[in-house]
Image (cartoon, rainbow, N blue to C red; front, side):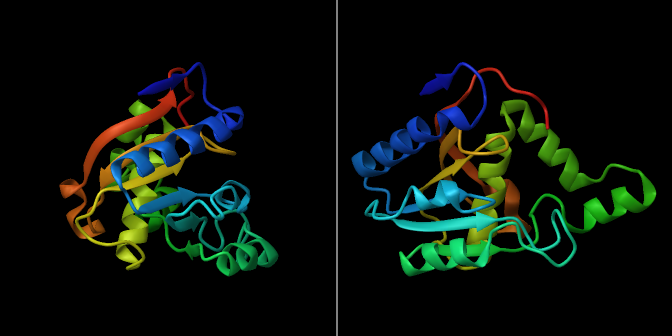
Length: 185
């Protein structure tokens, strides 16, 4: 396990290298990567693994709009990287209730609990579940997941995700790398 001094995109290259090295050494075939614009996901082109990019849902920042430009999505898809833009596993309807009624709800409590390990660990659990729910990765198989604390990547974990309705069956097997110092997001 590797600890970066602090969170941030300056860890992207080293995080990706650590994730790919781990996947190669252990024979893990699937990598899920969180990428809002596609920049981080593009670094996995020609990596020799089946890669799924999970990006923000439409409307996350601006109503009706995706954060990933169509040309970036097309580049990824032409390179064989599947791109998933769907409702965030730990937001969705609970977030709508928070916006409307100013409360806190179960999935957000789960998200805040995972953030005690860093934003990247929370995102890894979230995007892996989203990719599994979409049928883009196999059920019951160890995968490597790469995410970050905003832009770029600073966290990589090995896990066996569970479908959202069985989220507590998710198994985080190992943390490959993460920031040692981080902000709560």
